[in-house]
Length: 246
Image 1 (cartoon, one colour):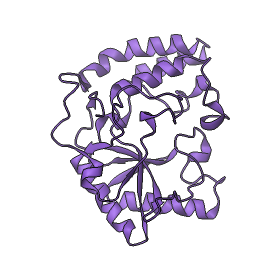
Image 2 (cartoon, helix red, strand yellow):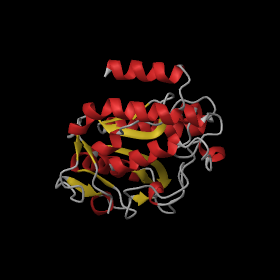
Image 3 (cartoon, one colour):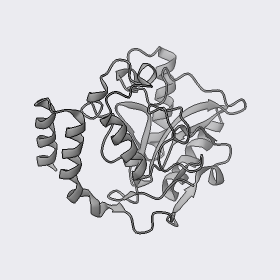
């Protein structure tokens, strides 16, 4: 892995084009990762995965990758229906967060949960087309598309594909109105960091409330995205699934 990372950086710093970089990294990483990705029955949902709308009363879904309302600007491979799946252990922990928020008149809204590997592959192909900047002004206005991998906003594999990572925000329980978090889902830039100084005090407080409750119920935050959390004791830490969301 160290060799792969260091060699990848050398390729990038030597000004090889991003498409060539992605091709080389993909070839180098193939033998290291293919045994970890579940391909055996790609249409089959594992028994310990659950649909969030069935196990968490009142949870709201806005599945951005099922639609064109995302940083690619098109529906993403693998999202056949606008549903959210997680492992049962992650869903149970999330249900506890939802229950605690209810006392404040708040709830959760999900942007993404389990993400099939084929969706990640779609992101990689999109990143290789440097001419496609349809959504740049909305999602990455201050960063060149060729740097999204280097800056950590995209990767060849995602924790979402392990089934215990979720992207989410806070909403008012009754109206479903979004709570002001100071930025949109999948905005690539330091403005999305949980402690970004560009956010107002109230926006930072909202981010802190979400982060605090998620951590109290076993989730670990991601330093670059206020909406992204992974169950610390995830049941499949080394497995990247590829069954579609259906």
